[in-house]
Length: 123
Image (cartoon, rainbow, N blue to C red; front, top):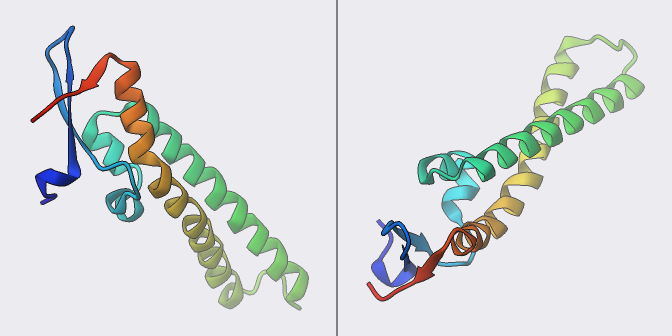
């Protein structure tokens, strides 16, 4: 459970809705759980953005690793080499995307709430 001092209370005067937003720094939950964090928060836009970017980057890194192994390997369809190479490519894709989203997501979520009419308030 996150301590209250690390949460920012926000309220929408128009609708009366309240949100508790985590601090604006690095999001460890986004780092480990990825697009599940915006889904749980009801932030469909960023859930879709994260999901699509992760899929595209993982696909590109898998294709790149596949092409590299195919260029190096004597037998281009050697399953002992291709399986680990594609998994390594997918892993490299996650290593690139997860820290990037973790670094920006809390600040973007806070900015989106401000644009939707929420204001910071005292708890």
